[in-house]
Image (cartoon, rainbow, N blue to C red; front, side, top):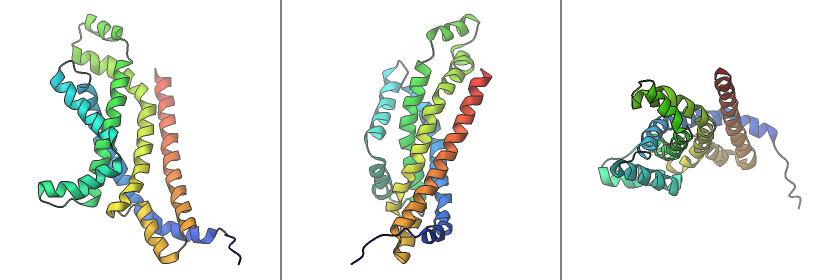
Length: 223
């Protein structure tokens, strides 16, 4: 009995149009969640630097909880567990965006904290000596320098969050992997379809990496 496998390129190509129907969901969930996550990251990252414990401790708790638990568990809790608490169902896409937002926000918080702490205290003292307030010193001197240093880890987090959307097929979100599962159920071409899914994800992440490198290079040139 001959069990030699032959890759069917035609099957892989044929699956692409169907798979791309899930691309809008993948991009919407990842980038929508990342925008919210970036705002959460700034908020909790700065709160974690606050000297007052009642600001710092809750921020630290948020960061450790969402960094210390798998995002799959988080989205399952949001989608299946949270409705019992609030007494209303949650849409799968909404649950996915919330999961990406809170998960990425925890990691971005640490990026923000590290970026701000990497700026020498002398920079702040120089701003204060020029008559700037602490807020003005942070906004005009500390933050621009810190943000430039945050670009590489922020880019890495964006790539991770894009790939994390593949997990949300478990709650029925029609993203790339879910589309692949549906297509495979009808064609029985798992190897070729998942190969196509991987190539699409690779195309997205490589494009994002290229854009971030261009932005990083221009930021360094502008200094």
